[in-house]
Image 1 (cartoon, each protein chain N blue to C red):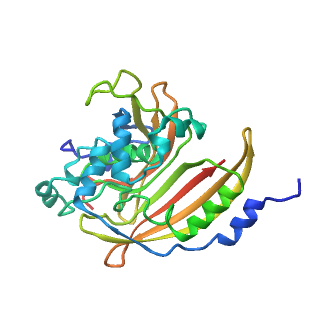
Image 2 (spheres, rainbow over the protein chains, first blue to last red):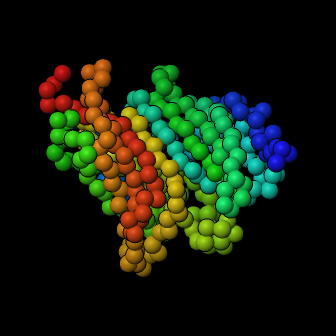
Image 3 (cartoon, helix red, strand yellow):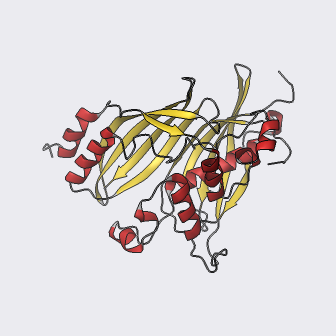
Length: 161
Length: 157
């Protein structure tokens, strides 16, 4: 009972660490392909003339699109997440599933934006369920645009088992 | 889109978000993989999905989240603004397979839905809160979440 958790011991020192910033180009073509993939025909994402006349004055991205790849902000690729996932796999857990996400949107993401994203590892918790131990990892990402304005924040949960 | 604009005065607590139907297909998952850059074989390779104990390739959680974004942006229209969106991936969903190059086999249709849980004016913003979810063909909410939006007001102010 009191033997503790090896994987939590390894993950705790990583909590609070921030990945090196990632750069994301928000390309019009990538926006249109993203909207196509979800069957969203909204002209704000692809019709330049329509979008110009809208209150946005140009093409915007659907909520949650911050450039390609959409998880380019250090979730899988960043140095911190690399260390986190190594610790998870070393513990014998094999399966990593997306648990959910929370977004706060502050200003629209526009075609042509260059975003900078900072990913931070914020939490690790272990629970024992019916099928054994499960690990809940939380990452927070902050997206800034070329003007230095925060466009959005994202909090994502990964479930490892 | 191109629909009548929704106004703050149009919505009531307990009312519904205009539902949106979605059909996940193996083709949609391929398109999503390319569009999102998520190339996890869990979403396209049978043997890998089996080895990960999910049976067969599953719908990307983030794809279901994107459906919910579509639900909200269609509902609030061009003059509405989405401030918050969240969801949890509670259960697996399995795409329909393709029958032809463009048509899926018969099968499950998913519905994105929502109910309005609150409305208030704060700092001159007309804010509406909702519970939202995607449900599978059996009506099970596999992807529950919430959204906060700002709507235009007829009272201009």
